[in-house]
Length: 359
Image: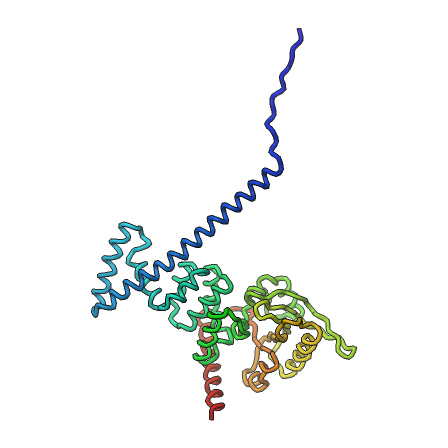
């Protein structure tokens, strides 16, 4: 008798292409879900603005603040009972504030394509309209997450830009141009000071230590520089009359369409630093500038700078910016005071200069 053994049937192997198919279809589904979520969030932002506008009109017709609060409280109870906590009286007041500070529907319609309701809810309680518009427009252009927006506000980015130190009407003109054309200028891009506490440098270090730390933490350094910076070279060698010189760091800024040369200085800025940077910029313009690029710009990063020295040299006419860097963050209140005082002094000087030019 012959016994025939049956081998257990094996499950057919999945072809390798099926795995690829699963990945592709999964990405399609996730992409569609993300687009739907974005569309819904965008529609909700406009809805919240419309609700805030309508409620605000009703509240403003009442001359008594207490009566206005009662209206919003009663409406919140009715709406949240039917539509959920998203329409509570607390959130209705957020919507009213939204319509109050962003009173132009066209601006809201443009911003909601990039900003979520969570973004707007953070922005609406910034009292200074120039500061608020700066963060709204930069957030839309650079596509910040809500976490990034919070970090930028906490680090007082606006107060550290050259823009904030201009007279209010010039700030408004530049923000309007940014909103209409999406055009970034150096005053929107460059900061003073730069906060480099993430480098971990303490009391004693050499210029090479500073450069090494920046290269080691290049991703964080670029985040502090801002969106649009692309690393090109370290210790870029240039030769002039058979003499070699080295640019510490070279970047390209995509939105400004220009090379950015960065020089690192251990101490305070000195007038001789200007001549060195001018040489680098003229060489870059002659040998490295592309046909469609703007002229190169220089950033001298110093441990400190003397305001009058920088002012008298009129460095911006040479395409040079000077900024200080801080390796340790001061307490929040001290940071606020330092930056606030710097803005007040710079605006005062700018207004005095403007007045002198008119006379």
